[in-house]
Image (cartoon, rainbow, N blue to C red; front, side, top):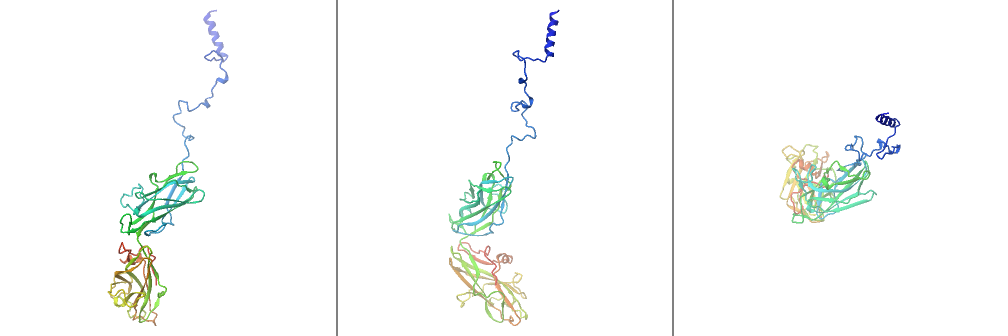
Length: 418
C-alpha cells in the first residue's frame, strides 16, 4: 500500500478517538480544562469597564447634615463690656442617612442679613463685626455618650475655628450648638477696647474647610447641605439702664378730678459696670373727658406748665423748669388744636446722671383740672416701647453710657404701663 495512504489513515484514526496531545506529547486530561466562568477579570483583557450594575468596588457614601438657626436663639440685645458667658447664638444641626460626628466647625463675626456663602464677609451688605472686642468665644454641645462638652477659642481675623470636636448627631436626629462669648472693655474704642455702639453677629460658617463631619456607619465624610446660618445682631455698650415702676407709683388707671397730682413714679437704674445719663423720655397718656370740658386736649393739656418731672426724693424743684416738652396727639402726630394729648416727650439738658450701680426715682405730675371725678374721668401714664415711639419719630428713652450719646430704648424692658 502506498505510504501516503497509510499515513492519512493513521491520522484519521487519531481524530476519531478524541485524543489530544499536549505540547510535550502526553494526552490532555480533564484537569487541564479551565472553566471560563472562573476567569480572573483582573487579568482579562476586556476588564477596562465595569458592568453598569457592578458597584462592588465603590465605597459607601456618607450621610448629609443640615445646620440652621434654632428658634431658641437669643433676640437682638445689648452686650455689655466686661461680661462673661453671653449667649449670642444657637444653631441646630440635623443628620440624615446615618449618625455622625461633627469634628470641626467655625463661627464668623460678620454683620450681614444674608448667608455669606463664600465666607469672606466682603460682598455688598457684609462687613466684619466688632470681633476684636470679644475676648473669647465658646461652644457647648453633647458627645456620643450624652456628656456635655465645651470648647473655647478666640477670633482670628473675624473667624473662630473649633477643631477636635465630638459633636454627635444621631441618624435622623438633631443636635444643638450654643455659642457664648466673653466681652472685653467697651468704651471709646481706644485699642484694645471696643467701641460703644459697634455691632457683632456670630454666624455658623461651614464653608470650605471650616466644617468637617464623619459618618459613623459609612466611615466616610458627611456633606453639609447648608453651609451658613445667621446669628442675631448684638450692640456693644459700656452700661445700660433698667426701667421699673416705683413701689409707691399710682397704679393703673387713676380716677381724676380737678387737681395737680402725681400720676406716675418710676425708677431708672444703671448697671454696675458704669453710670449713665438720662437725656430724654417719652410718656404715653390715656385719658377720658366725660363732661366735655376739654381738659385733656392739645389746647389745654399740651402746655408745659401743666406737666412736671421731679426727682422723687426732691419735689421742690422740677427737672423741667426750662419747659423742654413736645406733645403728640393719640395718633402720634404733633399736637394741634382740637386733638387729645396722647404723648409727651421731655428732654433733659443737661442729662440727669445716675452713677454706676445706682438708681434714681422720678415722679411725674400732671394738672388734671377740668376732669370730672363725679363722671369717672381717668388718666394713666406710662412709657411706650421703642417700636411704638420710633413710629412717631421719637425714642422711648434717650440716654448716654458716657461714650455714645442719643441711645434709644431699643432692647430695654419696655413698655412701662401705668
